[in-house]
Image (cartoon, rainbow, N blue to C red):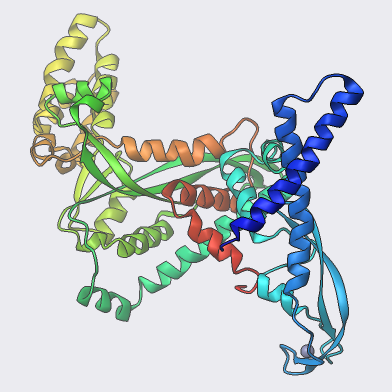
Length: 466
Ligand SMILES: [Zn+2]
């Protein structure tokens, strides 16, 4: 929208006159003038009130001359009654406006076409305010959000409204994912994509992990109504690309990595998805979001993860061509645990650990397994580690992965879990309804991915879209 500069200046002129008078009055009565912060705050409050008044006038002014009769959704006829007042909560606070109201159909439903046209629901928040509330809701806890919002909006919003609008954004994301999943199973879509795939990433990484969320107590199977505290796995998926870090920008940790013969790589263009669902269900999301990115058509698709079996099962099922890599740090940790369990003497411990870690780094996993087997009789940890390394043998050819220039650490997905789950859903005292946790996480994942604007557009189309 474009506004006339001239008119804006006129309004500014008038506002400045009003503020000047208020300042002078205060000086006269209190002998001291307001501080700059007080002037700013006062002006913000005035501008809010002007917005409030003005938006009401704009909405009322958008009402065209009412027609005598219009068609009802049911196919019947609605007759014009009168102009009726309605109130919505906008970015300026409560706004009242008048619009034409129709009634008298046999279905008994009335209608205000202006409300439908602009997605206004009397008594509810506008799409503009909803986007701001949800933006606070993905960043802060629901009981903290109103305090933040009041600072910026200059009026009070209820905690439950913030929650409802944030979860609504998550529900819209869930809806978009559902549509993507349906599409990704249609033969016609997949064939069309083969013919005209669009941009195919030269190299793409995928990574999955899970983090615990505390959910509301539910009765356990077999036990009557007694409730138990419950923890559920929030699964997180991240698609990303990697780039080389220029030497000057390398952190101490990255420099350390380079010294260990690995180029310093960092993730970029991260796209996050999350859900509380069984692995099979989550696999559909993995496939659908991968389709949207042409992951399956990429000549170099790499998956990084810890040893969790569900991850590798899904990768094997949907992307059998992908390179599978077990996170280097998880693998190394297993060796450290074996050394700590098998040797109390620190010198002996180091003497065992050093060559075996080097062997792992060089991709000689068979040697690593043998070294664990040698300790297995007296050390259970060593026996377990031998199984772990055997199960993941081909996923630990770190010599080859390094030679190919691949990232071998799963820091990206671990950071994703922290950002989406730990930092927002695991705040002190937090206990979630499962659906609330899912939708809040999906909204946050969209915010972090940078697809927030599309959710706001979808929210603007409500309630027509539902
Ligand atoms: Zn009707």
